[in-house]
Amino acid sequence: MSEMEHSFIDIGSNLADKMFDGIYNKKKHENDLKYVLNRAKYNNVEKIIITCTCIEDIDKSLNICETYDPKGEFLFLTAGVHPTSSYEFVDKNKIEEHNMIAKNEFEDFLKYFKNESNKEQQEINNLECDIKNQDLKVDKNTLNGDLYIPGFVYNEQDQNYLDKLKEKIEKHSNRIVCIGEMGLDFDRLHFCPKYIQIKYFIYQLKLVQMFKLPIFLHMRNCSDTFFEILEKYKPLIEQVGGVIHSFTDKEEIIQKITNYKNLYIGINGCSLKTVENINAVKKIPMDLLLLETDAPWCGIKKTHASYHYIKDKYEKRNYTNLKKIKNILQCDDTIIFKDRNEPYNIVDIAEITYKIKGENMSFNSFCQKVRCNTKSYNKLFKCIIYIMENTKKNDSKDSVKAHFEAIEECKDKKEKYVRCFNNWYRNNFLKGDLTHACDDYYEDYQICIINDLNKKGLGHLRDLNK
Picture 1 (tube, one colour):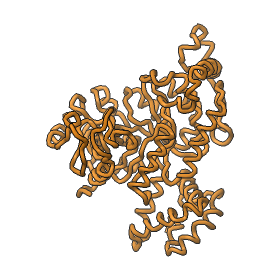
Picture 2: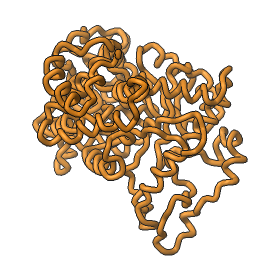
Picture 3: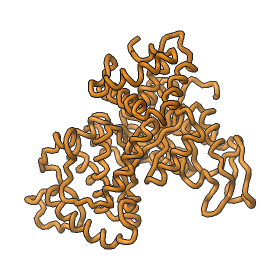
Picture 4: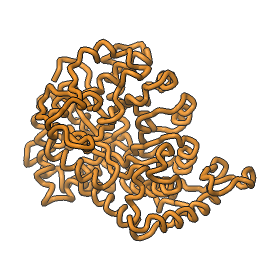
């Protein structure tokens, strides 16, 4: 690790992308993920959340985690369906039929969500969701009961896919730290029409309700519809928190975001393309700022308005040009590919954002503040980091690692152990209460965890206040 005081948590990196297998339409080099992660650690990236767009991504990402981080300290992931992948829920042989059904359902959806008195002449199929003046009283449903979804009807196939996501989250609760990437993308409707995206965006809120995990949100050219939907589920959104990642909208959208408690803003290279982007980033409150790479996408390019902030450093780097590779290349720690972003580059995002915002603090203090924001955004990270930083002085990090290894050892034979351990953590920190465990899980916690910790000489870790 390089000799720097600051460290980073990359909240969004697509490590399951084929580019890290060396495939760019055709094979250019061997899988170099080992070296990508080595470089990230060298640049003081302490944790990475792998963003997943479908179940196939989740499975591949879990394999990456087990291969490169078997102790579960460095790599984590999201679980959900990207808006442009919303057809994942649908029988591939019945897409046209499903489109017709979903479009009719969308008409019923709009009857609930649009203000009829002001928009009588508006055609239903313009897909505008004006729900600002409606009151569906979803608070109770959203927080405790069955999630209320007006208009749309979900069939057995939909439920089966959602159940598979649910099973992944339950089984891998030590890895899956967010629900997503979910949301809306009206820039790429050729992948999936608006009404399909909306239908399954809302449907996935059921997972958020079940697991009370933060939401990893995608928002592209859809802010009006996006926030109209969020507003109806505001109690849930504010309870679990979330991040709108890869923010590229205008300044006025930031004000909408600040109207929600616990909703953060993720910045990457795409957030720093234009002068308009830079002006928006200046307005992001420091308390809401998170950093990401969205690798292998969203890197800083010479055409970006922000490029001059890192020009000198960028031009000194020895990049390998993919276009000039003729034979399949063997990689190592020194080979960094031009035009392929990776977590190593998060320091560039940090430096540019720091200079743009002009905060009255050192760069190290800036990075520490963003790290603290990330701990607050993701409750599981907060728990892990809290233990690493607040165990007794005579506790080495090795002993804390042994604590997590103990959980891994019990994983197959004591799934309940792992499940209640994570539930205890999440519920404690979700409530902001470090003094006792949530009553629902406390008995299981006592039985399953304390005994095992005592056996391994780590019983003092059961009380985070000691």
